[in-house]
Length: 180
Image 1 (cartoon, rainbow, N blue to C red):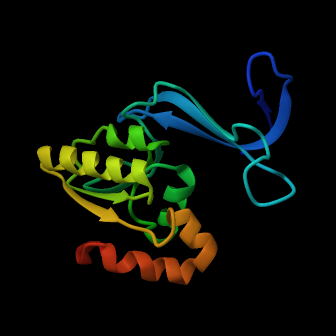
Image 2 (cartoon, one colour; image 1 turned 120 degrees about the vertical axis):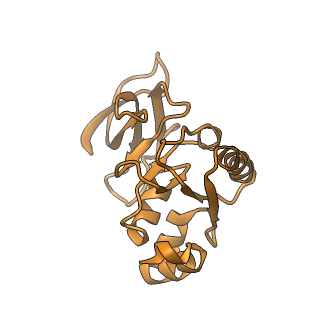
């Protein structure tokens, strides 16, 4: 979190300051390859009322914002908020936020990965990302399990239904060995 992160709609626009969530994008070895910023509205819980409240820079393709170390069982999804919401109910599972559907399709697999949970966004881009990532995982000998929210993504589910209901949504979709 940064309380006054610079924002410009374009190169000629005046500089503004907004609070922001800032995340490093890293490769499989942990080297920073990029950064992602989500500007926030300090008066409400949500994104800043600006033209582009999210921006990323750097080498993003194949890399991710990581929550936890690589392991045999991991989860991946598009957005940081989606992954953080899912992490509330699957706290022991390392996760990766790819930052977009296109980047999720291209995420690189850690060597140790054997089972990948794919946090699906319910939209055409999310459907395509799941299909491509599932196919790539199968070709690499990795079991892919799709986790589907009730609404557009798991963050929307958490906000709309609360923590207990999010657990009820996710639990039956998780492999029994990983439920513990």
